[in-house]
Length: 374
Image 1 (cartoon, rainbow, N blue to C red):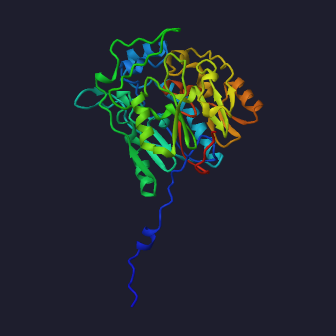
Image 2: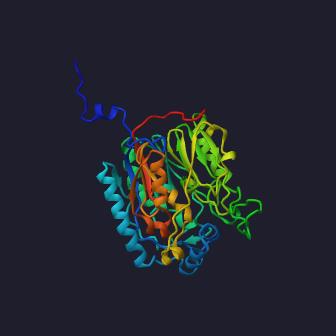
Image 3: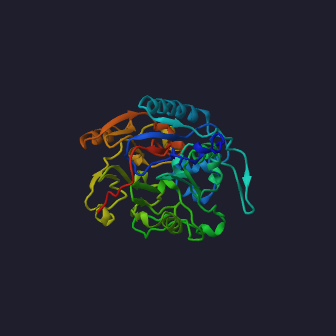
């Protein structure tokens, strides 16, 4: 006698196909999360923030910390962001957005309190490795709850089959930060503001090349954070450190940027190509051209990023690359290397933390897990 099956049981038994699947920086892009500007608040005044931003921006940030960004900055950036989203959609890429949040609301832990920052840069707080999406333990107190604005997206991905992990939530007490930290001058030994009190890292300090990940130790990523991710991923992955000569290192995507299998863009000011990891010996190392100067006085004062933001590109596939329209030197260089640069405007996003790579999180790329190194 046949037993009637309850509706939905057969469907539930079918293995879910994860909507999250991204193994590198160059496979054909299918879905991406793009950040938001609504509710953006100038980050709270904390040494781990001010040590990482240019001097002019640090002075502005110290005076205005906890207040909303000036409307003129938001409106200029919003126009460009809307154009970027429209471009992605016109190219057939699915675009997902986080919730708008009032980042000026104060929050606290048992040890400290802060206001928020913004959710303009999903690349920092979320890391995609294959079908897993990882919430990262960031070192800026004002970003402590930043992933909450992405929770509806994360829950949806999880229900549809993605793996969802959160790294240990850091305490961010004084023990994590070097007292009386001073940015090292040129020629001085490198030092960082972070101790090894607990694991912290930003996802944007990592880039992916299949089974190999590359990382820069920085003022938001410590050795303990790198080791946490190494153990979490296990023996199927290898993590290699890229030494940076930047005096205020924060995020690898203006230092070392994989563009295609066996091809990477490097910053000649920050990277000694002779000291790159041995696994890159067979790779074609492309030297970034000097960035085009920016004359906008407001940007010089408010940008949270250095001049090498010209390297902060978004790869659509192993040929097409979205790059900043202003940086004509980079556009010409990409073309000379055999890529198809797609110019787009996002210059005025810099006061909010980045450009195309920072503003996005590639959730799904069409490809499989492979090894691209010797």
